[in-house]
Length: 113
Image (cartoon, rainbow, N blue to C red; front, side):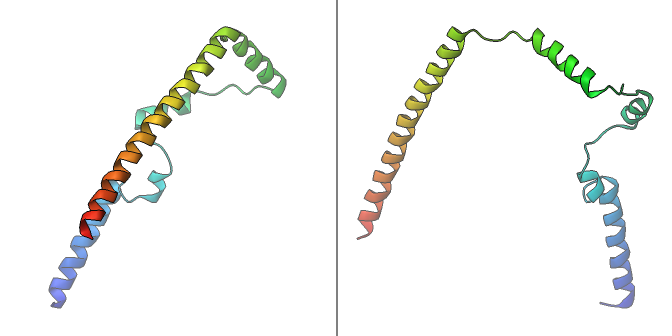
């Protein structure tokens, strides 16, 4: 490779890396933060988040928690039973599939002997 070819190759490589960096493909700083448009960043600067004391924060959390519609005991028990049943059914299904594949592999390996 001549000096001219080397310089041309190095220049092409630098241009390629700069282009990829502009697309944030290899920009390490861009990988650490979510993508936001410039308009979104501008709007974020305009909006100031209200600072509240820990006591006020706890009151707000309590107020929001009071708005939650909690399930009844019957709904909770019914859901737990359904989860247990589905877990058992899926465990049996996967046990059967695994056993079938195991038998198939054992039969195929038996053909080699």
